[in-house]
Every structure is written in structure tokens, then in C-alpha cells.
Length: 470
Ligand code: 9MR
Image 1 (spheres, rainbow, N blue to C red):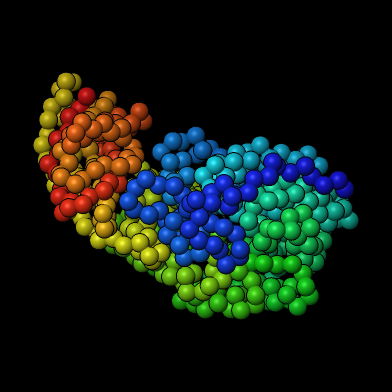
Image 2: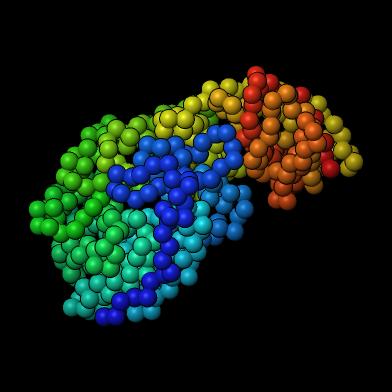
């Protein structure tokens, strides 16, 4: 079979050399996302600990500017959430299509982020034609798929989730089409094919409900041990970590350690922690504690190389559509505001914050269209030399707003740096923030929020702010 053409090669570490602040245990350089803010990003904090902190992403969101600002700026790793799966990459037998996945890999490379490839062999999101392949041909089809897809991304992917979710909860093999038509050996064959296609990618087995010690993680443990004994290539185990509020397994660290002791790396690959919606302060606090526990468990084991959230914003999570009544599982809210869970990860990774929640509600002014609004300014985080704040605009009038503007005067030594969900102009120390083009309309009684980070050399006082509809 001819070698697949592959993408144009690009050496991440060389282009990002100036920004590299750490090196992973697995040997790849980790670039820190660039930032002009005083506050380090999760990617930068993780890199300083020789790890990555990343997010999954999917193609439809790549056109959403507020989304991509966070995706490109905050993380130093990306997982392709859907479009490297078989139904996208080989929609017809022998016909390969990398259009969509290439966009995500290009985005990651443009932002100095390493890529986890996901996934080569999985029972889900398969093209329909797979079911028609005669049993005697399926292993050849699997090998060809891996040779092409992993060959295409050779040099661009640091980890491959080679086989995904091959076990049932009781530790027996899932009766997938691969299990039924090829038999037990299909997993080893997939790993061998992946090593041949991309000798430098770390090869992972990835699954859910294997975060703690139990029948299912025991089965994965035994698989890895037997691969190591037989010399079948395997480099890592991915613990997906789709967790439930308050239920981080108590054996998580111990489980990571026992895999590490077999001589493989471990990654937290799809972290989210779901709750019954709506959120409230108590649930948010529990979720923050849970995220902190997961981060600490990974940091406690040298071979735990990184953490990936399964997308980062509650507005872009798979949870609500699959678990009705549940959601709010991620570290940013729907409007890209940082949740307590974000700050828990930030602190666990070594970032320093003081969780000030100073609030001031101020003047209502009436705009030209006869409607009014109030604005609430909240300091959501503070660290040496900097701060983050969130301003919420509430429509107090009897008709929807079409636009709004909030104004305040900076204290001596205060600046406004990067700002999201609004457009800022400054004149001396006077700041005006107007709505972005997508959040000018606020329904009666509704709210819109924007956030920003800034520097502060002094006491960082909360300003008096005014709000007007425009
Ligand atoms: O996030 C993915 C979602 O958009 C898809 O509809 C779904 C299809 O099963 O797959 C989701 O991602 C899954 C991942 O590939 C493997 N582990 C479980 C993830 C959540 O279902």
C-alpha cells in the first residue's frame, strides 16, 4: 500500500520556541499560549508544570469569534472533538476526507497548541458501509484506515486515541463490529498499525468510567500489562473523566499511579463534571472542588501528562442533549465567563488568586430610545499586579434594548486589557464599553455581560459605573 501523502510538516516547537515554558514528560515541547494580560492562562500554568491543559473543539464553533478567542488564547492543547472520527475521515470505503479535521489542526498550529488525535477505532460514529464489510476483510480495512488517517497526521499529532471504549462496565469486551468480526486481537493490530503509520505519536487506549479502580479499569490495566509483556506498542491510557458532581472517584490518583507503574503515560482526556441544572452557588462550589481534585490527582503523578476538558464552555457541551436536565459541566459559562471551576483549576496549577466578590450597582440612565439599564461591576479574581472583572447589564425598561454602553473611570494604576463580549474604547482614564454586535439586544428584564482582565498596581478599587441604552 503506498504511504499516504500527509500534511505539510510543521515543527511546533521551533516556531514557538520563544513561548516554550516547559517540556512534557512524554518529550514534546509545550508552547504557552501568548497573552498580553498579567494573568497567566491555564495553558501557561500547566506548561510550567511540564503538562498541557487543553480543550476539545468541534468545527461549527470555529466561526464564533468570542469562542475562538478563548480557545486560541487559553489552552496549549486541542483535541479534535468529532471530525477525525471514521464517518468523517473515510465516509466511503477507501475515500479519505480530512477537510474538516485539517481546519482544527491548522487552528491549533496557528496558536502553538499540540493536538491529541481522536479517534482511530471506535464503535460509534462509523460510516454505514462498515457493516457490509465481510468478516475476512475487516482487519485489512482497519489497517488501511489507520495507515491513511494516522499517516496524514504524521508529525501533527502528539497522541492518538488509537482504540476508544472497547470494554463494557463489567470488564468484558464490548461486542462492537470489530470485536465480532475480527476478535480479541483487533486492539493489538490497531496499535501496531498506528505505530507503523506515525512512529512519533504516543499511542493511547481511551475509555470512560475507568477513572477509579474497578472492574472496567482492571480490564484496561490487564490489557496494558499484557501489551507491555508482549511488546505490543502502547504509550498511554486516556481516562475520559465524564464525571458527576460530587463523585470524583476516591481512587483516581491511585489508579493513575498504577497505570504509570506499568510504564505508560496517563492523560485526563475528556473532563467534564455535570450537575442538575440550573447552577447555583452551592453546586458551583462543589464543582470547583471536584475540578481541583482531578487536577491535583493528575499533578500528583509525574506520568500524568495533561488534562483536556470536553470543550470549555457550558454553551458548547454534549451533556444537555444526552442527559436531559443536566449540564453546566465545564469551566466557562455560556457567555465565556470563568466559573469557580476555572479558578479552582487555575489555583491547583499554581496560579494565585484572591476570590474577591466586591459588587457595586450604580446609576440607571435613560438612553435616546427612552429605555434604561443598570450595570453591576464585579471583581471575579485578583492576583499580584492584575485582576479580572465582569460587568452585567440589566434591561430595566419596558422594551428590548438594541444597544448599550457602560462607562467608568479607571483608578490610578488601573488598566483594562483584553475584553470579551463587548467593545472597549478608552480616553485617558475614561473607559466606554459598548455591546458587541451579537449582544446588543437584551430582552425586558434580561441581562448581558462582558468581562475583561486588566493590570492594577494599587488597591484595585471598584469604580462607580453608569449604563445607558443606545
Ligand atoms: O462530543 C461528541 C459529540 O459531539 C458526539 O455527538 C458524540 C457521538 O457519540 O461524541 C462525543 O464525543 C464523545 C467522544 O468522542 C468519546 N467519548 C465520549 C464523548 C461524549 O459522548
